[in-house]
Image 1 (cartoon, rainbow, N blue to C red):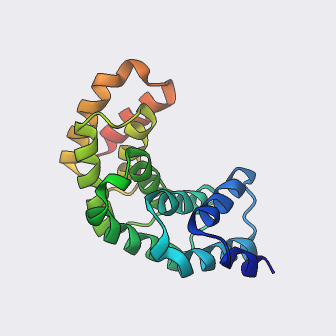
Image 2: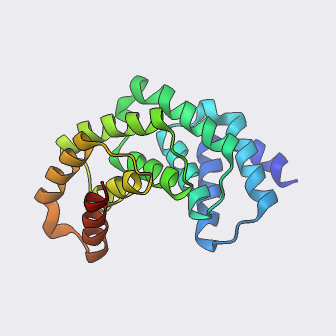
Amino acid sequence: MASQSLAQLNPQNIANTAWSFSPLRFAHGPFLSSIAAASITRISEFGSQELASTAWSMAAQQVLHEPLMAAIASAALTRMPCQPRSWNAQAFSNLAWSLSTLQVCHGPLLTSISAQSIALSAQGNFRPQELANTPWAFAVLRWPDEQLLDSLSSAALSKISEFRSQELSNTAWSMAKL
């Protein structure tokens, strides 16, 4: 019944439904499988926010659904060059965090996230949490990217007074690891 209802939702509602269950930290297998199936079916309609949010929701519940993550990666790689303005620092950071939390080392997607993040950070579009989480994700996956680290470090220095202690420690750990 749930999968039939989920299949009728639009992409934003599917992503919002997945997101709304994340704080519960209760990974209900059948429900998450229904979310994944509905997402995969409609993935071509997902925008950057829905892709990142759905990936984040699964990662927050520590559920690796490989077909869903493969579909998200494929859709993200297709959309990033075609719709660069629809992507923001939060979407890139959340997607990178999701990959690292689920230990999904998808080289082409990480390379694309890096390139897009370098461009956005140069424009000052990253907040402290994103400046901390993005290098943390790359460090967890052991994916060194000197240009990304240089860019995010420069951006972090200009906003260092806005960082909370956790963001400072995550950033320092990430830079030391890479």
